[in-house]
Image 1: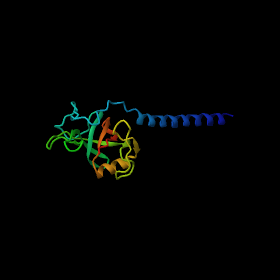
Image 2: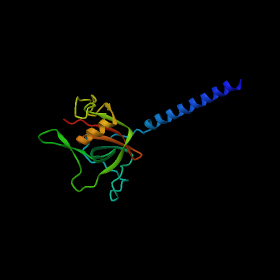
Image 3: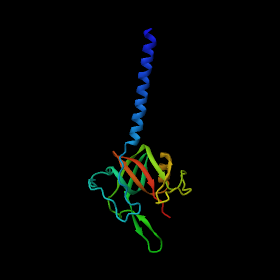
Image 4: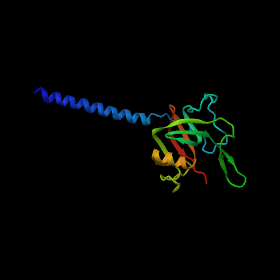
Length: 175
């Protein structure tokens, strides 16, 4: 008579372990704090006062950078800040720091990165998928599309870094 009870208790304990593990995994993907986003078309380069650019290239501190992924090696991205420069003939364009400026960072792309595309989920730019109030991407796409697209061509984005990893990339649409 004890065997059915033991089996029931063992099964309940196993289920509790599975549920706890699943909850922990979900918490890991959702525990990124809400950082204040910079203006998508800000006209100054964002600084990282705590970052030491005299040492090797490393990750930016936690927060959101208006930036450009300039190089991908495996699942590690090098990125730099960008700013909007108004044009005289066109609306303007995003520009990177001048040649010789060392404002560059490098971080691994998280396995569960959130990629919000402004151009749909194909490697090549496709349909426009931006919010009605801003020029920020809203279409959720896979990590592999993020890597393939940004290897092909650099796109200005809001890049969120948390605990040394890129956890979110939200593209900025420019005409």
